[in-house]
Amino acid sequence: MSNLNKMGLAEARDALRAGDVTSVELTDACLKAIDEADALNAFVHKTPEIAMERAKAADERIKGGDAPSMCGLPIGIKDLFCTKGVPSQAASGILEGFKPEYESTVSQQLADAGAVMLGKLNMDEFAMGSSNETSVYGNAVSPWRRGNDDTQLTPGGSSGGSAAAVAADLCLAATGTDTGGSIRQPAAFVGITGIKPTYGRCSRWGIVAFASSLDQAGPMTKNVRDAAIMLETMCGHDAKDSTSADLAVPNFEAMLTGDIKGKKIGIPKEYRMDGMPAEIEKLWADGAAMLKDAGAEIVDISLPHTKYALPAYYVIAPAEASSNLARYDGVRYGHRAQLAQGDGITEMYEKTRAEGFGHEVQRRVMVGTYVLSAGFYDAYYNRARKVRTLIKKDFEDVFAAGVDAILTPATPSAAFGLGEMAEADPVQMYLNDVFTVTVNLAGLPGISVPAGLDTQGLPLGLQLIGRPWEEGDLLNTAYALENAAGFVAKPGKWW
Image 1 (cartoon, one colour):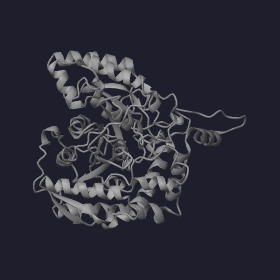
Image 2 (cartoon, rainbow, N blue to C red):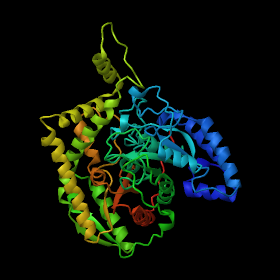
Image 3 (spheres, rainbow, N blue to C red):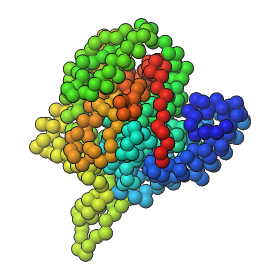
Image 4 (cartoon, rainbow, N blue to C red):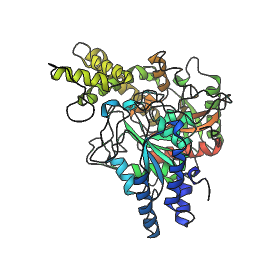
């Protein structure tokens, strides 16, 4: 069989079970694809030895007939997940040389299920960014191009390396994390599926923290069925994470019937933004029509506090980042600045953090420290927390009224060129999260499904937002949307 790396998880799993292919062959195909794709800068720490060792072990396990769904499947791990003995830098200079002595719960669960780690994937520094341009490793590059234009495009952020790697068939799937849209926005930009589960569904233990009340891990895959398979392995209660939910994890794949007859899908009027491109507006309308044709009832809904979501998010997330990043001080691990004669501990902290953190991380730490400071705590941080509660209640009211899922655009535009937005105005970049941050603030599950192409041939995604803990139902609605949209476009290989 050729082009093994182009398979999805479900297809590869079935081929492995049937004995048509081995995990070693699959892994070898992915490793070759990775070595040919340095131009995408998606994989930043390659682990071929670990990959081959795990692939051989997976083949033995499959032969023994005791293999879970993920066994033998080659995947990439975002650099935010700590992986034992493998550099885990969160794409930051301050964690240079850090090789953890432990494994994150999510990557451990995947390893225990027999998944094969191909290496670590590029991302925005500490997951702060929407374009993968804040990484110490340099930009990740989208495998997509606008028509015949050779401008390098962003794969989205912060999980840009994960998005680029899955879209370019360097791995069968990848882990991502989502604090304000960092799984769903890159998935939409590169034409793949990405799901952020309910807050607490996946353990955060061993994932480098950005904003602890918002961060959530999830899979980035080639289709909805693959997302269901991988998500089931990633979920589960973890005593090491106090926010982890002690709930049974259903068989998400078994819930994919595609039958959504009688489901109520809400269309929030507040997401109709001024200046929204006509093609995003059309895609949204087309998506609603597809779901209606599949038997769902489309209802107009109101989420009145949506307009306050971005300002509230950009107070809460930096505040939590400022607190979480205080530990990077050059004392215990990671980078430590060279000190001049007579420098004391204060100078060491200042120089280390100035050298180790990039500009965007410094900007957010300073904003966060400001909003938490004595004179401004009530004016900013406490007010943002109250707004967050109101946003959560908006969703609760809609779901209480019988709505099963909410359909919105995933992003305000298709992928933009690298460098087109980063330096101009940070606020312009922050506006990329306009459709996604509410889901994190409310702790809800959200999924991005590729649904069409723009006039320049770039992918566009639609977002479905589900009820808390009902990822199975959400995945099934996404499955119906995916079947109706019939998105099969792939980027032409230029790298």
